Length: 52
Image (cartoon, rainbow, N blue to C red; front, side, top):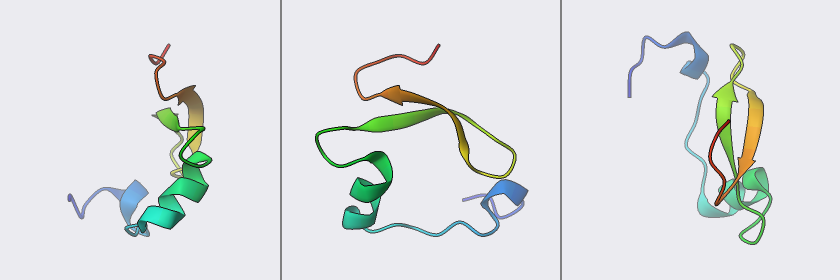
């Protein structure tokens, strides 16, 4: 992991259960297509969808 990336300076690895809660659970998978500078997601897409 690149330590010089300011967006990731406060990032931490999430456990399996935490990841499920972030993406909405195992049945409602979502992925981030585009990230804001503060590290939050700007554009979400579903698990089988492609990013716009």
